[in-house]
Amino acid sequence: MLIDDLRAALPADRLVTDVDVVAGYVHDEAEWARHGSPVAVIRPRSAEEVRDVVRLCVRHRAPVVARGAGTGLSGGANAVDGGVVIAFDLMNAIREIDTTERLAVVEPGVVNNDLRAACAHHGLWYPPDPASAPWSTLGGNVATNAGGLCCVKYGVTADYVLGLQMVTGTGELVRLGRRTPKGVAGYDLVRLIVGSEGTLGIVTEVTVRLRPARPPERTVAGFFPSLVDAGRAVAAVGASGIVPSALELIDHHCLRAVDEWKNMGLSVEANAVLLARVDAPGDAGETEAAAILGCFEQTGATWAARSTDQEEADALFEARRLAYPALERLGPVLTEDVCVPTAAVPEMLARVDETAQAHDTRIATIAHAGDGNLHPLLLTPPGDDAARGRAQAAFEQIISDALDLGGTVTGEHGVGLLKRDGLRRELATTVLDLHRAVKDALDPHHILNPGKVLPPRY
Ligand SMILES: Cc1cc2nc3c(=O)[nH]c(=O)nc-3n(C[C@H](O)[C@H](O)[C@H](O)COP(=O)(O)OP(=O)(O)OC[C@H]3O[C@@H](n4cnc5c(N)ncnc54)[C@H](O)[C@@H]3O)c2cc1C
Image (cartoon, rainbow, N blue to C red; front, side, top):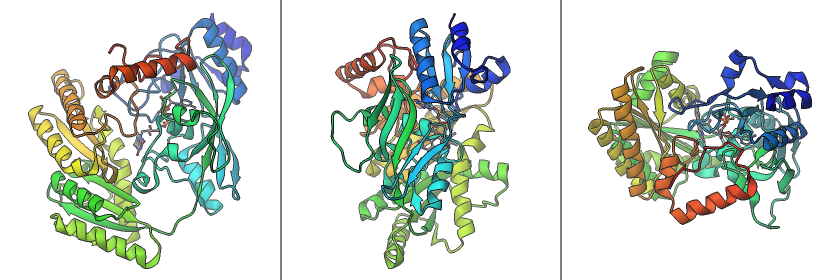
């Protein structure tokens, strides 16, 4: 039995089988995605232990699901029946911060904000900043190619990963990539693994590029009568040539939910709020802020201003970060993650409104609006199956609309379980075949996170 072999191979404290404790590791934040029951949760302390576990799972043909903090929103970290979950909460060391080469080497369980804080101590900055940065891990960020608030200017996780150590689906411990700023030796396997959602390899170490710390940001806020008006402002900013360091959208459903939960005094009289930041130093920053303010005013903002009050600006961004957990408190949330060209943001937001009405579904929206990445959040009352059915239909409609407008089904959360059908609709069959060929090469026994990403039939 797999469990006997695991017990024989690992120190006792690495193995968790207590059902109550295991229950805390079997699903992520995607409440609509199903999950299975693993035979054990493994909490390794080294890459070699991960390799040994994968080798035993190869022998038993048992599924292996890697898990960071479980903040995923697509079911990617959900356990599979009869397998193991490898949880990286004990592999959370920052091994190195090299100030000369501007890079950091970390274990996969390091929490994003902890890395950012450690870098700041050295006058350095790790840009990728998912709204889940206080909780999510570098391993999870790499596996989902996480985006975030400042990605509109500074790019996503893949733009910062130089090298990886990982265990393949045959139990080999390998190093991919490099430590140098440049390097083109062989195929770019690092890029292949980043965003592969634990289906091609289990990441045991990450080397990331860092930037020098940047000057303080300036904030511009705008209140809009409708989501579509806010979308027009986003398109106007895109057309202006100014690249903000953040351009986030939050609607009144989300603001109200956060305020009711945290009592932050967000008395905003608007259906949609845009929050922009710019970080050019000195006068250039002033010019950028003024240009964005102009875009907001010209597109119908009922109120827009440069924030002179840092606390107020931080509170609005904090509300943006807390929107998802605030809505989760109200009932099951089905999260969209579509991404459309910036010019199509107003049309996409209009279609989301139409979908909410057509399918009688309550939809709250937050968005990394500056890069066209929208998160319509579909809310259903607990236990209401009819509402669930309508929400599922609305979910499919939003995906159809995003594809119709030249977008993609997932901008940053990954395919996991919830968007496998969307992937089938987005990619040509020949391209899905290429995906399957890559999977067969790196995980020939299909034990790594089986059932995730690739659609079962196409
Ligand atoms: C409030 C909130 C806000 C969010 N905001 C953002 C956002 O702004 N941008 C964004 O991109 N996402 C966001 N997310 C989604 C989520 O936080 C990200 O997908 C994040 O990268 C997941 O990290 P995690 O450590 O929680 O990983 P998990 O959820 O545990 O796992 C995610 C995926 O990574 C795989 N995985 C984890 N560790 C490894 C490893 N070591 N090796 C191989 N595979 C591994 C898992 O199998 C799974 O497929 C948000 C989620 C919440 C709840």
